[in-house]
Length: 215
Image (cartoon, rainbow, N blue to C red; front, side, top):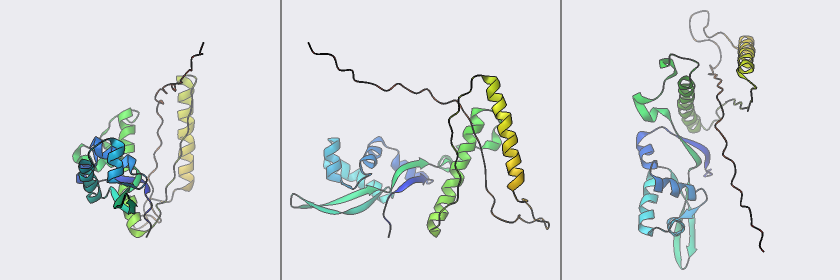
């Protein structure tokens, strides 16, 4: 049985999200990316062992921590735990009717619409990843990411138009009909494609420690 942590785990259950969203538990999970005992984590955080033990049990019951073997330390056998994933994402369905929906956004060139699209992608992926994991299959996906710098708004608009033309041409060349002649679903598996572009957040300059010359 493979017990290696997943790269990313999507949380789609409200109760599990409630267990996770506490600063102390998030810190425990960060420290448990490698196998750790509750006692070791308590020592690292400078907290009482009983307090950390309680939160470790809650995280284990909610399937955020798994048992990762035991070790002997100072004549005591310590149970070690490891986080079930390297990182976690909250699926939009956790918010229920408050989740963002792209079809409810009027302005398709707004930041809200782009955010709703990414929210839809997170929801779709959380459902599909869970199904693929149960079947022991790998989910086929495609991801593209690039950094672009435009000289001015005119160049940005030219890029937008060229990208739209190129994507439309490629989709038209490769997509199969969505509907069969009898009105049923078309042949093959449907995929959802979305593209987004937004200004990059400002990058904070790295802090440098400048050593002063000693006299």
